[in-house]
Length: 296
Image 1 (cartoon, rainbow, N blue to C red):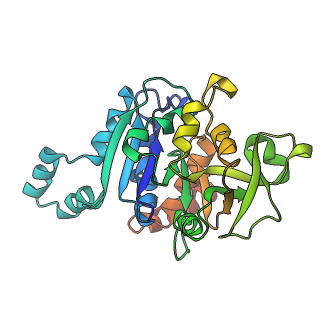
Image 2 (spheres, one colour):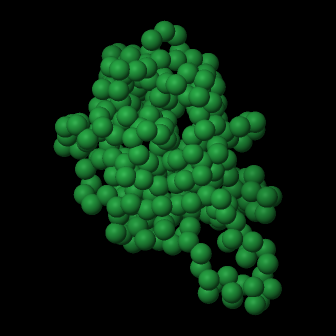
Image 3 (tube, rainbow, N blue to C red):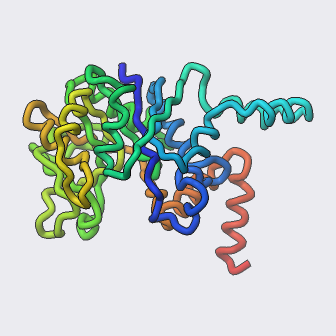
């Protein structure tokens, strides 16, 4: 059973400026919860029990969000605000632990994951969830991270979650090259490589990497040996390419929807979708949409 997840949250969030100048981009709210909470809930729903935040000195608000706030809870209890109190106490289940490690320098995604090595260890597979990407499982029996874990447990192959993107948009993404036909949604197929932001005419497929990985512990030794690549950073893609030389890595094609909350329009789309079906605010929000769509 896959029990551990790494969430790299040390980045400065430059795509979200000026909103992320004084608060972590991961703490920007969608309806009534910060983005990071949605990502943690996704991991917990897939059976993850240990979450490792790879963080930075400026990101204390993230750790505080998942910590107990005794004074606030005591105040809510004294005022009889039980519903709010329950929400605070249920941000994470009691059987899930959150651990923080520091990334001392911004040396890339691969380096951030390497910082989690002392907690994860070299002998245990783990997941990686990029916290500015929301993966929506609405209408599915299980979320896509659960599906990716099932694919790993059936095959023993590392997994990279992908989604189909319009062909004319492939230059914006990391695109996988496949060993065979594209997998159906909910299935996985071995890859032969990942091409970063290829030209449209050179793209090996239209399946884009979307920020979810399931990797064996062996990736840490490869990351430790990986030289800085694009942007003078240690690239996870380079280590995965080295991993492929000794074992298969597969592309898992997601079934749900994804929203890039590190981009303003992606954030707004996520807000629209999640607000419309919110159990408390959904009806009122839909009425607002109707009013303003009609020029109100």
